[in-house]
Length: 294
Ligand code: NDP
Image (tube, rainbow, N blue to C red; front, top):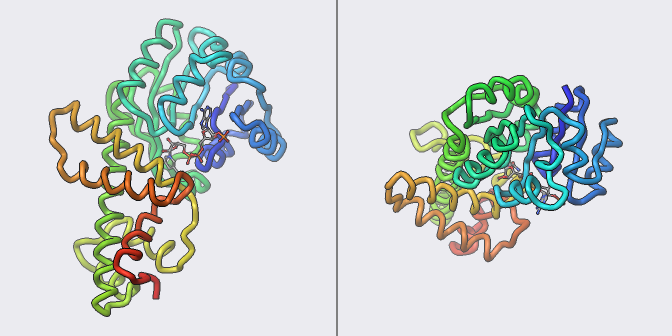
C-alpha cells in the first residue's frame, strides 16, 4: 500500500520507521529532518504536502495540535488538494475533537475518509511498536486504518464516532498530568521530612497510590536524575486544555482538571517550550528546596 507520513517529530519518527516496509513517502516542515529520515530508511521524501498526497492511498499526520493538521490539510499546497477520492487520512496527533469533526467534514466533501487516531505509550512505545491507538470515526475507515496502525501499535481500539479518539486521549492525559503533579508535590514533602525519594517510591509502589508515573516515569527519569526529553510539557499543557473543552462540552465542571491545567500553564511559562513533561516536578523540588533523587 502507498502510504504517506507527515510530521517527523519526537514520536512521529519512530512511528513512521515501522511503516518503512511499505511504499512510504514522508514530509516534514523542516526539510533536513525528512531528508535524514528518507536517507536512513530508504523511503521517498516529498517537497510539499500536496506532492505527498498525490502519491499515496493513505496519509498519516502526527503534528503538535489540530491547528497544524488543518493547516497542512487545507493550507497552500495542502494534502487535501492532492488526495484522490477514496483515500484515507489517519490523524495520530493528540488533537481536539471539534476541529477534527470540521476536518473530517471538509475531507468527506472530497470523498476522503478521516479518522482521529491519537496514540499512547510514548517514544519508547513507538520504538517498540507497542503503542495503544484510540480511533474515532466511521467503522469503514477504522477497518482500513487498522492494519496500518498495527505496524506501530499492540492495541488499536475503535472507541466511537469522529473526535472520540481525541476525547479519550485528552482524558488520559488529564489523569497522567494529575498523577505527575500530585506525586511531585508529595515526594518533595516526604524528602523534606527525611524519607528518601527512592524509599518513598518503593513503598508507594507496593501501595494503592501507585500509577504508571510512580512505577515507571519517576524511577526512570527523576530518581536517576536523567530527565530525558521525550514529550514536551507544552504538549501536555495543550492536552489538558483539550480535556477541559471535552469536560465542558459534556457539562462536567472538572474542578480538579481546572487546577491541574493552571499548574501546567505555570510550569510551561517557567520552564519553556522545550522542557520535558516530567520537569514539572523540578518546580516542586525548587519550591521545597530539596532534590527527590537520592
Ligand atoms: P514534536 O514537537 O517533537 O514534533 C512536532 C512535529 O510537528 C515536527 O515534525 C514539526 O516539524 C511538526 N510541526 C510543528 N509545527 C508545524 C506546522 N506549523 N506545520 C507543519 N508541521 C509542523 O512533537 P511530538 O512528536 O512529541 O508530538 C506530536 C503529537 O503526538 C502531539 O500531538 C503530541 O501531543 C502527540 N504525542 C506525543 C508523544 C511523545 O511521547 N512525544 C506521546 C503521545 C502523543 P519541524 O521538524 O519542522 O519542527
